[in-house]
Length: 627
Image 1: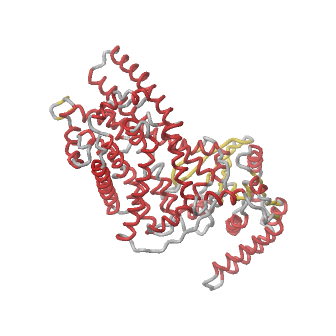
Image 2: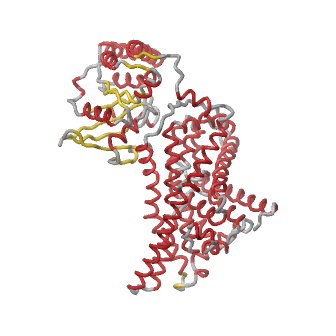
Image 3: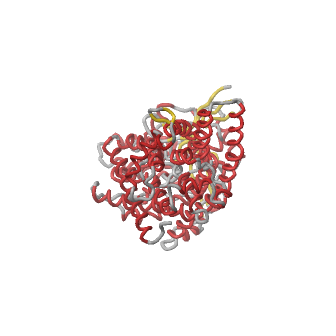
């Protein structure tokens, strides 16, 4: 079978990624482009005896090669020379989208124009005359709806046609290209502005002949924005949305599934493993390693997989509706008060999933000051890896108020971000005004295939950690908790007890000054999930079933040795805010390119968490919440 290479390019929010997922499904790989941290997505499919390889290029508004995304698109298209370039256009906003199209044609790159989201254009009474548009540009034009199989099939048929090299830009486009060439030869400092004027003048001419619209039409998006982006209602609605996400995660869907997984591990895997090891007459130390180390450690983390996937599904669903872009718009006035812009919210939102891509995403911010501040405050957010800690303690100590308690931890993280962003902006960075340019995509019902793929992409990292890092750490933690230089000993005399005991002195006024808590804090710096696996090994608290919570059984009794409800909440606050994991610290080093800021991030987050956790516990005592 012959192979054809296809590149998808276009502006952000044109449905390009949805189209990519529709074409390739699960047959895709995600990595990073060489030398940068921008996602690289490559997939493939078979069509008419041809293997089609598809690259989803980063969304970009131009080929000016100034941002990382623009450089990737420009270098790939000009140097790699794919067989077919598909320029994905938002059919509801051709004026903006055709700017990139003209740049592609000016660079000598033949394209297929994919008018995506034509269904939304029709709803807005925008009528595009495809044949007229083809004649004016000289390139094939295809209409698609990314969720419509027939339109995708038609696009596939166009892919497999003979090479696009036989297509020539129209006389109108060729005349424009000659004007641009002539203009760039002039010794004129304003030539870039004049080129932009030329492009938009040509776009106006093209659209005047090929697009008809009802300018009095009020769009569905406009109607919704009157509510969701309303100056009075926007923030309460955002908080209600967040609360709803946590209610779904911790009450309606995520927790019941977590209970089922827990029951499967506690009542199925653990007894089976115990019987199997006993029947094989495996040595006692090996039985302890498997049961008290691996199953208690890894199993305790796997219990929270449903919560992780439920949360990621909700966030991906909201992102697919177009609402998450409004969050940046809504938060802009608040973010400006702390020295950032609403655009800074976007990488921070990613921080609820994982700090690593959020730190990487900060490079999209317009100023170096904004980028550094966003990187340094992102670790305060409660990422997916911290979620098992919150879920464990909420289930044990606050079973009837789990949603409210975890919601308050997330709010505490957001407030810490705001506070420290303000402080860093005033103390460590020059106060600079930052520009804020944001495009709001139309509201739409998310493509569920894309939502599920994104949920899997984000959640599988948690599973990989559980199967590799947490597995290895559970073995190490078991060894450290059962041995010292004298050999196998009681846990209280082990290496881990000694290490944890030293750390515990730091929390003498926090209510959790035990060596077990101190040990969990140390392992949590390696990976936040390890806090739960450490406690699982030390306390044997892998069970989180409803029966265990209602009966205040083994887990309540085990954790009750070290925590009261108040100290448990103080520990949750500390765990949510303190030093980012090693992977996140490594990413900070890579992004800021200096050890100074990396070490600063590690130390100052620990100090902030220590102070806030102390205040929570001591104020709680004064208010009578000591039990």
